[in-house]
Length: 493
Image (tube, rainbow, N blue to C red; front, side, top):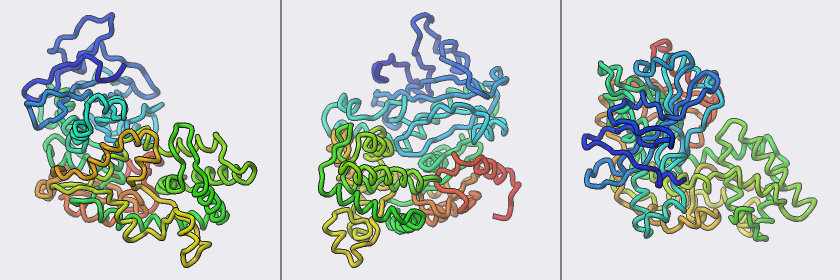
């Protein structure tokens, strides 16, 4: 059943979230006076180390326009450590904000390891929020957007799916879950943000600093910019370096990739989902270069595709399926259509910044047209992969994005983006903040992050080359080190 067809609960005029009214058919309606944590109709179950409660909250689509009665339903997985189920009203919450934009939180198979275990050992219960537009939170797709009518209406709707709205959702959820706690300190939540989740935390620090007990940011200290251009001027050179490192590890892939690119220029290759595997789309596999193990995963796909071409003269269904599965823009379309807007403030439009910067300054390095590749000063040079960047031609190459083309083009020209960060509030920050930035990060430039960390008063920034962008998911050392920074255990940074 579509999330939009679920029964709606009410949002009080004061702005606090009332308990959701989703009811199993065998359960009597729950009074609005019942605390969210005391509801008996919530689906719950155990995983190793924790009990999971699946909660839905109805939030205003537009938090700042009380006359707008539209709502979005936001989903959060609430995980309480085993043995502490009766302490939900007193245990502090840590809210996890996922990377993206446009990605949901996955259900952990266990909370006995990773950052989950670290947070639990620090005394927290966990709240994993599917940000609006993702997962079970009013998910955005061509199908769901079509329900909103014209392209103009669809674009207006999606404009409410940025970090400022996500943060306001979290703030209303915080009020619902912490209602009745006796002290101001006990009503605060800790925040953990990975990548774009760190962008959201910085917005949270700007809007509601008194609601936060502490904040941990992993690979997501955002650049305080008004438009994205500077981001790509910084990240394209880093991507060139990652390509050089990849081909140094797999030198035979130079010839393999060239063979694949030549083939994709000559043939119309249709993916099983109806999308087109063009040379430029194949280059986007390089986004994996920013993650631990990414070189190996791309090499496996390159070897498979090159072997298909050598033995059969075409790419197999199996290879095409694997390539499509490695690209998440169709399943998580916000990652494309709202990606550059996360950098836009104060009336600036993105206007496909990555594409403009690439064409102006890096076109030769990332050339995909075979005839132009042969005309380069070194025609035998490697063909480079691209990284975390979105382009207007994706609206033709990806099957789902085709159906969102008009909306995406409209959003790219939109000049009504408001302010995401308040530098004055950040400069006066009193919330303990610890952040890790990765020296070789090709998603979030370390230099731009360092400037922002210096703007946030009291921010303890750890810069390391030990991990790539997904360090939080790779090693428990990352969250453990950040908690030590917050405790003052490490003072030499």
